[in-house]
Image 1 (cartoon, one colour):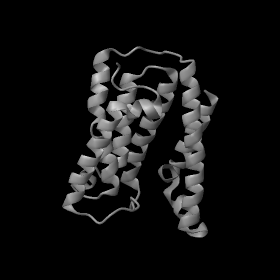
Image 2 (tube, one colour):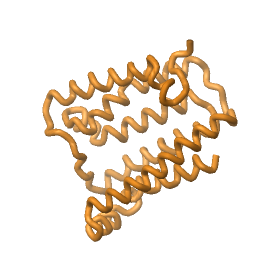
Image 3 (cartoon, helix red, strand yellow):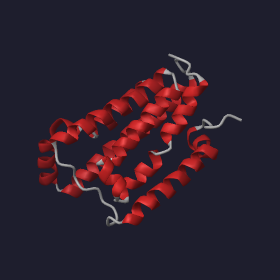
Length: 191
């Protein structure tokens, strides 16, 4: 559990710098240069992510079950997850979806985390998905007090929304049909 917690602390701390002190982040990025700042940020993020993945995998070997969700919550989770991949694509394919959500990746993160909390009931699940949910809510609230930095992507067009939805639903289908089992080790559809 220590690896999972350490990874979460590193990953979420790095991603919380703008939540806590956006001015400090901007001063340091200006002093180091934006590319250097992003490189350091990416390195810490990668270290945190690797620790999260490894720590979560180890925690799943000897799970501490806190609750056993009924089957209906697995169905609810599958429904909540439907817009997640389209929202992730919309973060980089600007259109109406991005305008309506302001930060589609945060919406996707909240839905992803909430859905997984509904469908999973171990201590590691609560730490992982609960941590990401709390972080995403805090980050969204902080957007009311700071300027959203531009996300690199293609120019805004009407086609981007359709592309985000088609690509996102295609990826969702791939996850349901086997990609989740291949990458995560857990099938979405038991069989």
